[in-house]
Amino acid sequence: MMKRFLTGMIAILASLQSVVLAEQPKLDDELRWWKGNLHTHSLWSDGDQFPEMIADWYRDHDYQFLALTDHNVLSEGMRWMDLEKVIARSDDGVVDRYRERFGDHWVQTRESPTTGQMEIRLKPLNEFRHLLEQPREFLLIQAEEISDRAEGRPVHINATNIADVLAPAGGETVREAMQNNLRLILEHEKSHGREVLPHINHPNFGYAMTAEDLAAVISEQFFEVYNGHPGVNQLGDKDHPGIEQMWDMVNAIRCGEANVPPMMGIGTDDSHEYHGKRGARPGRGWVMVRSRFLTAEHLIAAMKRGDFYASSGVSLQSVDFDAESGTLAVKIDAQNGATYRTDFIATLRADGSDADSDRIGVTVASHTGDSATYTMTGKELYVRALVTSDQDHHDPSFENQKQQAWTQPVGWKKSN
Image 1 (cartoon, one colour):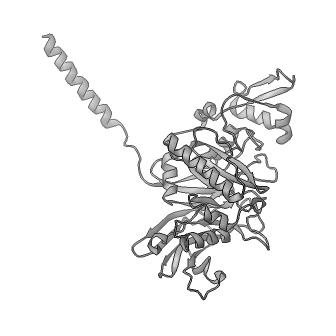
Image 2 (cartoon, rainbow, N blue to C red; image 1 turned 45 degrees about the horizontal axis):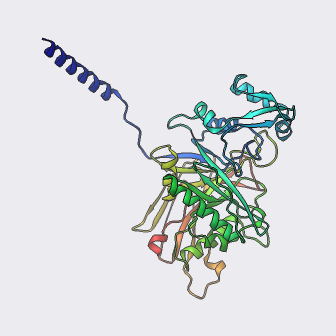
Image 3 (cartoon, rainbow, N blue to C red; image 1 turned 90 degrees about the vertical axis):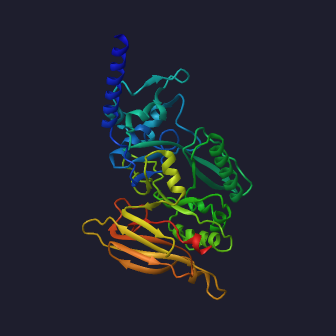
């Protein structure tokens, strides 16, 4: 009797379990675009806002992921900051707004045991991320801006999704410092068994890096084609190329004589100021990454495949490259009242007769409208698309800035 009872109960439980499993929603694994910023500063280094307030801003402005990238530090451990310094860096209302958003019990202040001055605690990432992260909606990624110097010039490289803080590796020259820091990041990635994204920051900041420097460090695949900080010399000057021109100069070397993969372009804010002050404000530049899942590992893997674009305001519905035909197709998520021009930009093979200015970063075709295609002819080392709206940037970092999007160089595998 007891045996029959137990057998019946097991059958009932098994049936209930199958019903529960059947009612579980299928995990959404469709490819989609995720919007994120990979260069952000807080009070942990030289920003003027609490990190959770910054993350809250990005989440409220329809970003799906954010990397906090303070200089040579991770937001971890116990950290107190002089309250007067916080106010001086931001404004008199910074703490009131912090309390209003997160509550009196969240904000911690004390009298310094050494100076007697009032201090406020900076919360580490692991303490506040649970307040803001949501599955498939918003993700915070631990990162660092490794801030080095060589030959008296700044050498800054971001490392996204690291486990521990990485000290600057140094070097006798700018190029050597780049190589040493990149090697450090790649060793960290290997030793921790995790996807890590290194990218070169603002190469024209202090005019620290040349196209030849960027081309030589062939293990580095990423750099900032657009950085929203007004002080990074985005457009160059009479003696230095602008960043987009530099991009093609780098890839002319890489895809030509060096025969290595091109460098890919990232858009970032490099945000420091969050209270309406002049300077490096949030929301100017970002990346759109096509991935099935909103995890650091899947986002970085997609970027390493080149499945992303950079933007300062233009959104794309699709970017597709048919390797067999050599056709790059771009479809724009058009906004009401805006018109768009898509320029297909290539570097052509050297034939011994053309000057560099006639073959590097050449516009090989232009189209007006919401979609455009270009088929490679065999003369190109690679091709990329630049989409420009007639709409002004909502918060420009340089004069007469328009909203744009940059796709990644393609066709180089076939070319090589």
